[in-house]
Length: 68
Image (tube, rainbow, N blue to C red; front, side, top):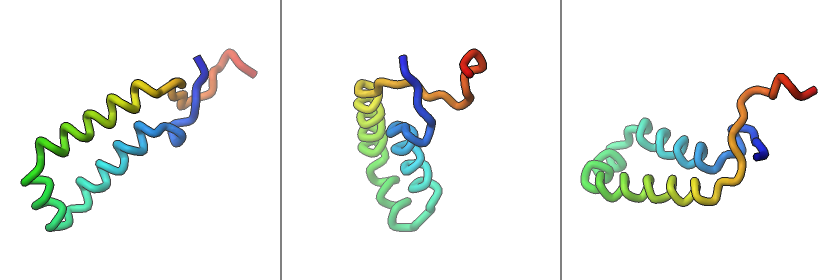
């Protein structure tokens, strides 16, 4: 199985965007998220499942010590 750098992972990018949105703390966003929390969770879970299904490569943070 081939590997890729973390910043090339669509799954990590989607989760980073969700985390930034959650931390942004904008009043309108917080209100909307509270009103639609189950929908947001279902959509994020669905997107993560779909991304996992299309993922081909594992993420590698460090170089393989056996390779030169």
